Each structure stands twice: as C-alpha cells, then as structure tokens.
Image (tube, rainbow, N blue to C red; front, side, top):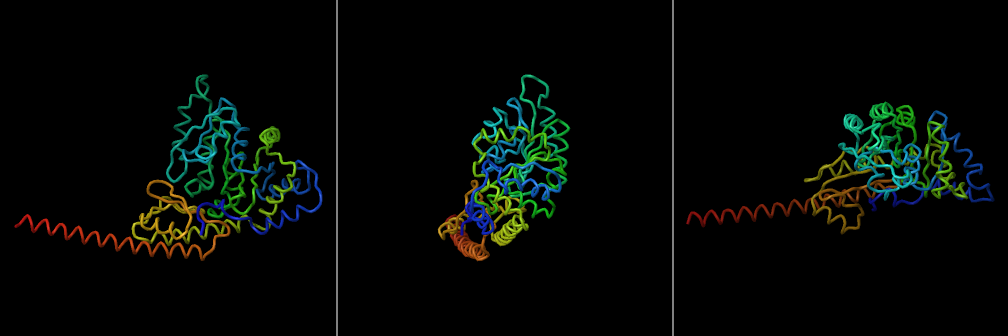
Length: 367
C-alpha cells in the first residue's frame, strides 16, 4: 500500500535473474565485459539509429554529466521551474558543469511552452560578456507533474533551442512511462524530435540501480568517458549495471512494466476523481497522480497505513509502479470512499448546526 514513489519498489524478477546470471564467473572490468559491450547494439536497435551509451548508477549522475557535455561553466541551462535538476539534485548540474546557471521557465502541468522559451532566449544577452550564455535546454519526460510532451511539442522546443545553438537534453527518469502513455516509438520523442542526449531511466521501472546516458550525436560523447570516470561512475564491475539495462530492454520488459504502472495510475485517478471535493491537479498521462482531497480523507488514508506524499498545502502525490497490485488500488479507493462519506456526514451536521444557530439568532432578533 505504498504509493510514495516508484523508487520504493523491489527489483523486477527478470532483472534480478539477469544479475544472478551476470554473477557467474569472472568478467573483464570497467565496461569491457561482454554484456557492456553488447549495449551499444541493443540501444541502437531500440532507438533505430546508431547511438553511444554509457551506464551510470543514478539519475542525478546521468542528468548532471550529460548536461556537463552540453554546457560550459559560463553557460546556462533552460529548464522548467519544477524540473528535477532544479528541485532535487542538490546543485549537481551546477557542480559538474563547473558553474553553469539554471534558468527557470514556467509552464502549466510541468511543461515548458514554446512562447516562453522563445521570449527567454530573446532576452538572454547572447554574445554579451556580462551574461551567462545560453547553452542547453533540458526537458523532463514524463514531467514532474506526471504529464508528457508529445513528439510535436518536443520537436517545436528543440527547433527553437537549435536555432539559438543550444543542445537539447531529455531527463527520462520515467521515459518508459512517457513512451507507453504516448504510444510512440522511443525514437519519435528523442532524436527524431531533435533531442541530442537522453538520460534513460530504469531504476524507477524495475531496475536495482541502473540508468544510461544515450548520445544521438557521437561527437558529443567524446569527453563523456572521462567525465564519468571523474565523477565516480565508471564501475569496475560494470557488468552489473549493464546486465540490468540489457534485461530491462529485452522482450519489451521496460514497456510492460511501464504499462502496468500507467494502467494502475489511470485506475486510481479515475476512482479518486469521483469523490466529492476531489480535484486532479494535472492530467494523469503516466504513473503519477496529484490530487486534492478533503483533509478527512487524507488523514484517514494515512491512519490506515497508506503511504504517499503531501505535495503542497492542498494536494497529495501518489505514484504507481511496475508491481503495483490491483488489490492495493482497490483498497485505497474503498478507504477513500469510506472517509469521503464520513466527511460528507460531518459537513451535513455542520450545516445543520449552522442552520439551527442562524434560526435561533433570527428568533432572538424578532423577539
């Protein structure tokens, strides 16, 4: 009954089995093992183009190191004001770029709008020595609001970025959920739409600890090996990261896992939306739900042992995962319905009290 995050889950059985298999015998170190060497071909097939891929252990490392390739120390990175690189990475992008500045853009439902990016770049001071120089655009897919960018939206933003000589990075911590939600190919929302480098997430969708930085332009990857080593992400036993990634994309495991997570989110959102006083804060397009519920309902769910985050002063966040059980979703909806009825009864009783008080005051006034 833990809907706190897709990070709270265990490891997908297929990936655990791949780790056990990788554990047999010895293997050449630092990514020269057979499994790691196969990743380039696997990911090139997945994305329908020649790519360069580097396994790392965390999403923050993938994002920060990818951006370090695109951005000089005097550069700026344009991102949404709720982007993970701004809110949740403790200055890692600034550190690994050597001091680049994050320029925050607004946007409903976690999405940057083309007009806002255009306006920001028009006033960026390009070529003026007193200003940081625009260097990169970072898009989150799926967004921090649980929404997705369509291929057309990514293409429009990337076209604007490239016209101003910015590289385009995509934070794909929940990339699989976006691909499933959009029912498109991985290529459609990356290189075909103008993305230059992708942080390809696996940990939130069934891996133990494995992400990949995928370059769609080989020239951008030239220095990445050194950057990864300097950052401490060149694993001596790289086969254990690579085995996770290989299993993850084999036989569409990554898409099957994301499909279940998305389906459970849709079921949960549909049920919660019917409750009196409930309001979804964002469209549910992947596996995150942001919903406003009466406080009686929230307190009741927490008391029953359901786990989720209070997101802001009037909403909560629930996240589903590859192994979310239908029974848990049903249990939460039934509990929410029960507490919603209690809340309704309390409101009715309060209305009666207020009505009686009002009548009494009227009678006294007349007397």
